[in-house]
Image 1 (cartoon, helix red, strand yellow):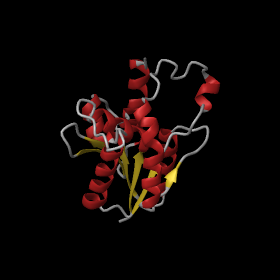
Image 2 (image 1 turned 90 degrees about the vertical axis):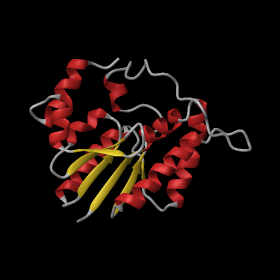
Image 3 (image 1 turned 45 degrees about the vertical axis):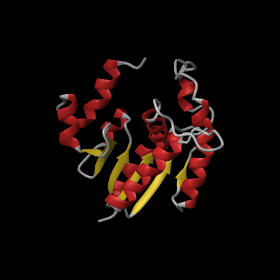
Image 4 (image 1 turned 180 degrees about the vertical axis):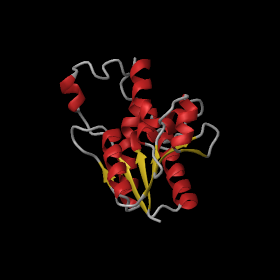
Length: 187
């Protein structure tokens, strides 16, 4: 069976950075390496334990996306990216290249848009697809061959298929994630 892992780079980077916020990893040059350390550890864990046949890391592009054109205030309430993450990003991209893993970044489209497109295309080609992300929006993509692979707070991962998504959000269908999140709203 072909097994594809699509990694939400920025989601994992932020998660890694904040996991060490109380005791950041600082190298001898004063660089906060928390995001880098967490990213690489998670990548290594996936490679070692899950043994994907295919893998890609998907990054958000610099600048605005098509959503900003539709709604100028899109993500206007978001805090600015911490400087330590901004400094870690090019290093993480270099590491992904050193692993010889495809890094995908599409101008004008967020990583989750690209992940969703690739997941559905790969599913049609017979892949088992695992979305390494904590982004609950991607729950709408889950199917018999597409799974969310969510990092746990205490280590390890949670694999969510259709039944787990329905149970987690008390829905009749995983496609209702769209409706649920629409009703919940987004700050």
